[in-house]
Amino acid sequence: MIRAPWALGQLRAPFHLKPLSPPDLSLFPSPLPALFQSTYTHLVAALSQPHQPYLIKSLEGRLYHTVLDMLIALERKGLTLSLDKAWEAGLPELCNLQIHMGVHLQRKLNTFRDSQVLNVEQIKAALSPEHLDKSTGLDLAQDLSHVWVYLSPAAPAKVLYSVDAVFRGKGPLSLGTPTGEEEHVLRFECLGADLGNQSDWEGTDSLAALLAQAERDTDLTQAAWEVVDIDHLLAGNPHLGSKN
Image 1 (tube, helix red, strand yellow):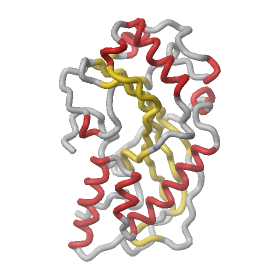
Image 2 (image 1 turned 60 degrees about the horizontal axis):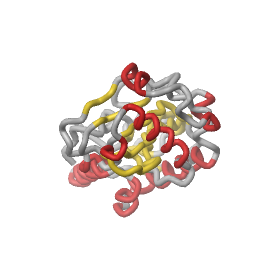
Image 3 (image 1 turned 30 degrees about the vertical axis):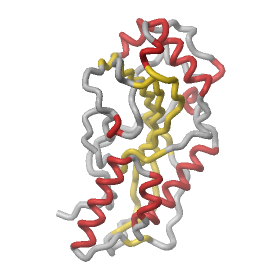
Image 4 (image 1 turned 60 degrees about the vertical axis):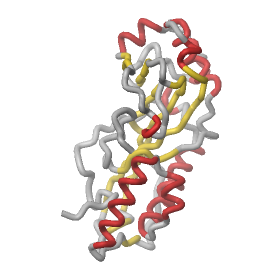
């Protein structure tokens, strides 16, 4: 079986896509979908060449090493990913917003093992409804299904934003035979705010203050976004439990 870092023709597994609600979309002004579109275009080209410097720059470490291994395996079989020269990327649909607090974007840095993951009800109990600046339009106290908080003395007080960009249209890559219409999902992630260590924010009242501070300090249009998964290749690329 040939494995490529790109799902040629279809996604590898059923993939749940929850479109962003209008309040969530307020976090992603027009420059961001255009940025994701540009990253998608350059990533496709870098996979077909391949161009390792761009892959290193744009892919999270664990994903980069997985993709590199697959490209090497294809090369050993005498195969290359062909780029359709007439292909153009369209703007993506944004889905599956997630906010993570307490982990690094680079999975290899998440070496702590005693982290407690708070569930929705535990987070709600720790927050007051007015803890966020409502000018963002995102009320986490009302809908926390997409929020993950990892509590550990060794964990950072980092807030990460994750979103899936869904691209639909003519397939850009193939192993020689064009594949027609395709759907591809790139998971983008960025560090929204780095607020020091969790030991500086101890207590449930401080959790509310931390998330509120992160909202005030975050400008997602200026953040350094990286691709952390392609077509569910790493099942979302979990923050904890990765070896790379």
